[in-house]
Picture (cartoon, rainbow, N blue to C red):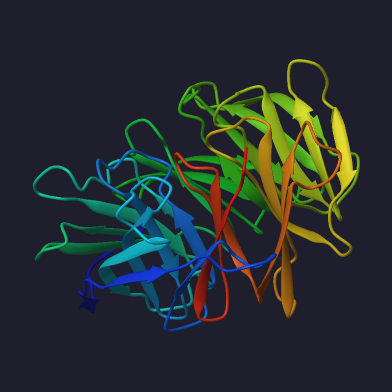
Length: 343
């Protein structure tokens, strides 16, 4: 079911913030925000401009661009430019970018989807001028934990939920495929080099790859423990899959075994997020479970026995890597925190 609405409120602003590097184990850079940040995502796609970034708060999504001194000598620290602030009826719980988002062609196009506690997927599209649209997709019967666009053309969205399903939608809001899971779905990944397969991670500790043509499971990975909280498919090497389960991180080479090749304790308490770097197949980050007063960020390298970087953020939430720099971001209490990693 799809409900088509005009966007109820679109606030436009362009602001630039330059923040110098923090010292010690603090973030490399921070950008202040007006509210608590629940989710933050760099676009993994080439938008023809500076890196696109979106972050979600209690009733809004901010879309902007980021430039860092590592890529532009005229920037001191980070330069964040707000392109538009979108009103969002509820707190944003997860967000995914469309590969159709472009800033280097006219009309410009911003397209992303969100999920919230009302169990609905929202598809937001804007030309950053006068055309704004939101489509509401209904079907899930419980909390949506993660979503992703088909990465080559962006004409489909996949979402996973506590209702034990992974659902695939077209951009009109039609549910085209439903995969029945054996436990809550926590992560879903769509790889640009293997667009006919979908990777779905379940909370009980199983990761399955589904063939979207035959709609059958073709490969299964087993953590050997639960709960599995987050999983990711390595962008730069399709045979690598990583996850956090319990307080550990685990890594698979999917050509070798259904059980992890590497496993190490990561966080004192339960881990929350796992994300591969988009520029280095051996670099990844994990965060402690959100909701704590201080959330720990760890950056790991498969060639090093200990984390290569340790950071912390006040009530951190979300985790995302820059498309072309070894830099990750997490949200928190009225700020975005960025960590640059030496490779």
